[in-house]
Structure formats: structure tokens, C-alpha cells
Length: 213
Image 1 (tube, rainbow, N blue to C red):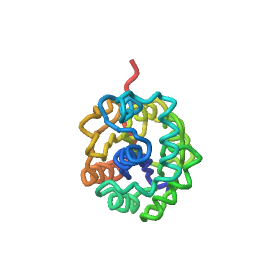
Image 2 (image 1 turned 90 degrees about the horizontal axis):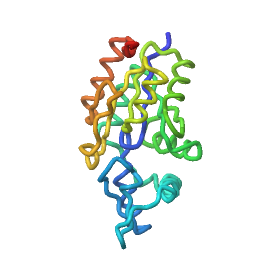
Image 3 (image 1 turned 135 degrees about the vertical axis):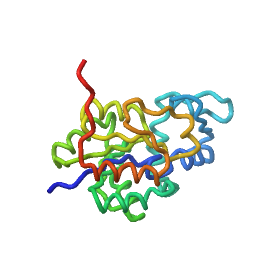
């Protein structure tokens, strides 16, 4: 029988990203990172004048970080222990928006920490890759975990029978991010999140789909 499936993001769910990224862009690029609104680009400002970076300047910095600085990242408290407990009951796939270029680096990063799970380096909304995984694996129950609200909306549209957990594991930004309206739960602590996920697995039922108007 096909096992349950947990599809999880990585940055700010399994691994700290914004804090090591902020330290790096400060030290190496003269850029400060301050979460003051919902825009990642708007949070990046030049130290010398305080002006926000243009959107076109942001991806090269992120790409550079993932290309050479992933060693600065470290696990969210309790994440790897929770994944070990969950992995005893379900298959785990890491769906991360680092893109195909950094997919293997991410897999190597997690494997070095003891999480040897398939990694998909996607771009854009996560609804389509989640729907493909569900179609391929046909799990009796599936759970999606991500820190970004738009991905929960995307999954709700493309794979509505998947349980959706909104998690922001980085305390520096968690209180600045509103709970995703398309998620079934918002939990930022891995002990509580593990229990919620294992409860969904034990129940073994699909998430309720929205009633048609």
C-alpha cells in the first residue's frame, strides 16, 4: 500500500535562511535586510542610503547565496527530529523554490544533516508540482508544509485534498507574517507541528475540499 506523503519546504521550515542571508549580504554586499512589509525585495536596503533594492537585484543575491553560502544555514529547532519521526510513518519530499540549478546542493545539504529525502528544486507556485506528486504516488493522505501564503493558495487550487500547514520557523520574522488563509493550520513550533502532522497521518483521510458555491 502507498504510504502517506509529506511535502515540505526547506527555508524557514527545515533550515534557517533569512538570518544567515542577512548576515551575508550585510558583510559582503553592503545591504541590510529588514522585514517591514510582505515584500522580500522591499526588506533589502542599501546600508549607505537606505533605499530599497530593485526587484531585479534581489534574485542575483539569492542565487549567489544558494550557490556558495548554503553552509551558513542551520536547522530550525526540532525540524530534523520531527522529520525522523514523520519519516517512520510517511514518505517525505522536499519541495523548495531554489530552482533546478541548486536542487542537488539542497539535497546534499539536507543529507549531510541526516535527512535523505528526494528534493525538487522548483520555481513559481507549488500547486502544480504538488498535484504531480499526488498523481504519481497516490498517497492515502498528504500534507504540505510551507512558510509562504501564496504557495498554500496554489496548492489549495491545484491539489485541494492535501492538508496544508503554514509554518514560519524563523522567530525573527514569524510574528510579522500573517497566517495563510488557505492553510488548514498555522504552527511555528516543530513539536506541535509534528503532533499535528502525525495526527493527520493517523486519521488517514484527505483534507476537506471547499464546498462549491
